[in-house]
Structure formats: C-alpha cells, structure tokens
Image 1: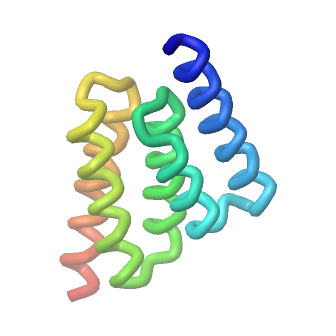
Image 2 (image 1 turned 135 degrees about the vertical axis):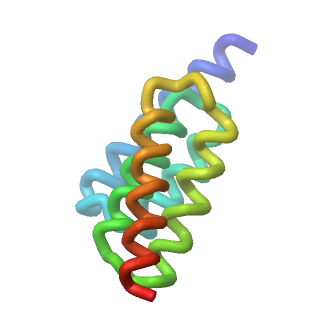
Length: 100
C-alpha cells in the first residue's frame, strides 16, 4: 500500500513537471490535476490551474477557475494554499461583477 501511494505521489509530481514543460497550459494542468487526485500535489496543481484560468480572463475560464478553486478548497480546507484560493475566488467574483 505504501509503495502504491509513493508511486501515485511521484506520478502526480511528474504530471506537474509535464505541465510546466507545456508552459502551464490549461489543458496540461487539467490533465495533471486529474492524475494527481488524492495526492499532495493536487492542491498545488489546482492553484496553478486556477491562476492560469483567471489570467486568461474569459467568462468561461473564470467560471472554470471558480470550480477548480472551490473543489480544491473543499477537498483540502487546511492546506496552506486554501487561503490563497479563497482570495482568488473573491478576486474572480469581483472581476466578474465588473465585467457584467
């Protein structure tokens, strides 16, 4: 069981490295986040994905950023990134209000 968990963890961080090699494209981060589910890499990938979606600024990407951030906060409420994700959510909501 420990070996499986370690392998999953290593694989998750390898997926993040692949996403980095792909210039953190939203698609590569989506794949990485799916592969990282249940590992300690998941909140880090979700944070970067939320940031990239937010940075694109389209309505669709902002909606997806909210989904990713909310899911990460719900799944990892005590993770150090959760507070930053909450701030990003607030920023997204403000940005959406200005754009409406």
